[in-house]
Image 1 (tube, rainbow, N blue to C red):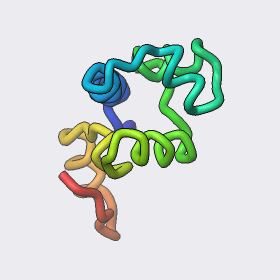
Image 2 (cartoon, rainbow, N blue to C red):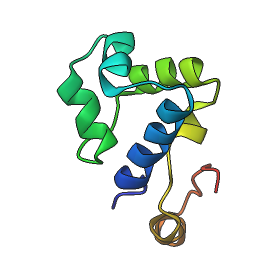
Image 3 (cartoon, one colour):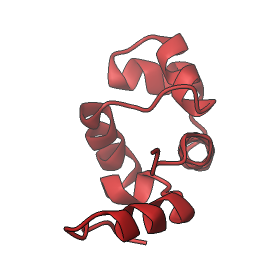
Length: 90
């Protein structure tokens, strides 16, 4: 069950980069990772690590939970099936 929408998260990070006139290579250099790694999470193939999310939240002046796009349908299913209710913003 995937709660994080990888495609939408990548698109959101891309929009934050565009607002700062930042290219993929610039973000890769800032995060200390390869161009290909950044490209994969911008395309929704992978998710950034928690360390990279923290770095990007500082870089873009946002919070980690604002960087991540949650699939609301999957979150609803999780909440219905989980005896302990997760604390995830919607």
